[in-house]
Amino acid sequence: MDKNKILIVGTVALDSVKTPFGERKGILGGSASFASTAASFFAKPHIVSIIGEDFPQEHLDFLDSCGIDLAGIEKKGKTFRWEGYYEFDMNEAKTLKTELNSLMDFSIDLPENYKDIGYVFVGNIDPSLQQEVIKSVRKPKLIVMDTMNFWITSKKKELLETIKQVNILLINDGEARMLFETTSLLKAANAALALGPSAVIIKKGEHGALLYTKDRHFSAPGYPLEEVRDPTGCGDTFGGAFIGYLAKTGDLSEKNLRKAIVYGSVMASYNAEDFSLDRLRTLTQKEIDSRYAKMKEIREF
Image (cartoon, rainbow, N blue to C red; front, side, top):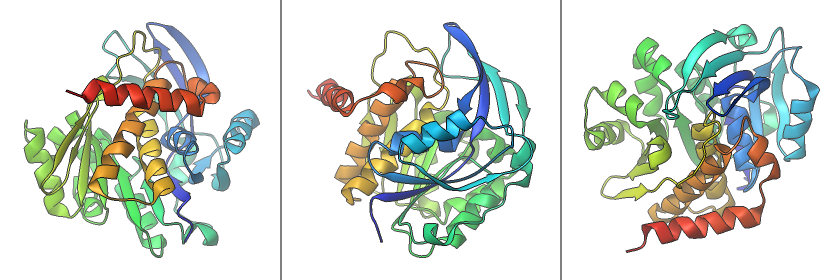
């Protein structure tokens, strides 16, 4: 089992986004795109997703240039598209239009060599598909899952079943409160841990992230940015960097989970600085290490 490989299952999409800082149409988006690009700074991602015949080759070329294995991407029909906007509260996207298109035909069919990958990230897709991924991998060392409010309201039972089968649940604060019907994030985290995961990470947007394990609690800060141009995909970027760092180090201790969360926050902060994946296209390891060091300073007292 190669610890430097990661399996990432999610969407590869075309987004149209408007924020107070500009507007872009038909740009690269989707949970798997953001997660795999972030993860590629630490390990080698392998994507499982579906795109349409209309998907621009330049976006595939970019993902390929990041060292991402694209053999698990199926091409059929029209590409999944999302259109939305942000007002000055950049923590919440408002959806204008969603076209599922080929995503309606998305089924899990892992290439044979993907089934032995030890580190698995299942993005916020249908919980039934997430369970198919989990069944398809042979000896996973770590399974991290993400979700979203749409699945909490439409497939809550299946979602709770999926959470029982993973090691780490990644969820934002509003979703945690909604899923476990409580205003207390601690109660929500404990309810999630009771289902089976060894850790729960609650994302709080610009305010960082919280890590809960059975008897420990860690609060990671958000990096203070003067300007957030487009926060789309920051949660997926966080998740990809998080599992990427764990795959790189092969260390699943609580102490190393903390470091992985900080790397996730660093990568998400860079992602927010520009539209789509444009900031990650130019990001260097030196910049990542510099911001990681600054994040450590923020938490010292």
